[in-house]
Amino acid sequence: MAETDVFFCEVREQTGTSGARAARRDGWIPGVLYGGGEPPVSIRLRKTEVLKAHLAGRMRSHLAKIDVPGQDYLQPVIARDVQVHPVTDIPVHVDMMRVDEKTRIDVEVPVRFHNEEQSPGLKRGGVLNIVRHTVELYAPATAIPEHLDADVAGLDIGDSIKISAIKLPEGVRPVITDRDFTIATIAAPSSMRSAEGADEGEEAKADEGEAKAE
Image (cartoon, rainbow, N blue to C red; front, side, top):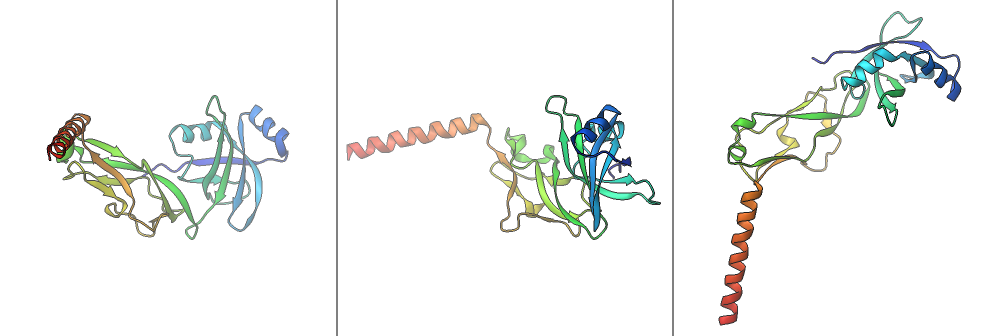
């Protein structure tokens, strides 16, 4: 189960650009807490906590909690927008959305591939051609899957994995619903493609020669 980050926050009395810069100078990350039927609040988060979650890849699409001053429980949240510095890639602003078990959101979830050693196509030199490294899902905010599992066991060259072959948790569905889209394919190795291309070329020449003779 994925680690749930808990962020301590304080209300920012000074807002706007100057307030955000002041927060960063003091070792905080400025942000906004919104949603849940309550008005938005300008906040600041501890830089060390945000940076830890960011470097672990948990800032986006992961349920977290915020320790809000004056609130006797930890508020479940999802980071909906994380602005990073263009050079250092360190977060400089975070928008947090309040959520509960009734909140449903669209999120991008990574795909993990399993049993590659049991794929006849890969054993023959085929290549796992990943079409989608992530899949956009519509899911309950409090039950977002950490990843999707794609099984390549038994797949040969030319076979593909469709979204219908991946088991989704209850209450979770793809955002794209009008087609059974492809997640990955087992592609032929370049040597095989070159050989097939050469054979087709020879056949074409033979056909052309026969046409001329006729």
